[in-house]
Image (cartoon, helix red, strand yellow):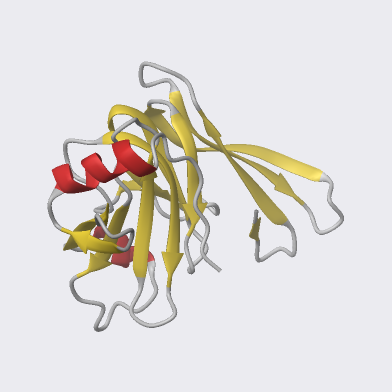
Length: 179
């Protein structure tokens, strides 16, 4: 749910439809909670599962199919939706996204698959960008959670190590949250 300048709010909802029939839709409410409008914010995508809000109040919609991507969507509709750099270009079964903006911003993406590695995206450069829309469209480092043999963890740049860890310890990862 996102606050609007009008004092109302926008509820964003993904459509988990197949064959490029998915997307993101919004229900706009006024300040008293009365429905004002129903809007389309993203179309032409497939199996938009969960996602997550960003610190600058945009929505990231995650596609959950073999070539899925993560799309940044503006709840107000002022910017067109745009594919992010949060995941590999070849795609995956992505479920949800969360962020840690306590120091330098870091973003996490789950993958709902037996070998769905947890991803951590760290933008390469935040100078002059700050916490803004553009941050998810810049190059960055992509790491994968790896659980070690002594039950600790580390981040690796090797996708297969992350996939092996997921298969052994945390298959079919669904939601994620950071507080």
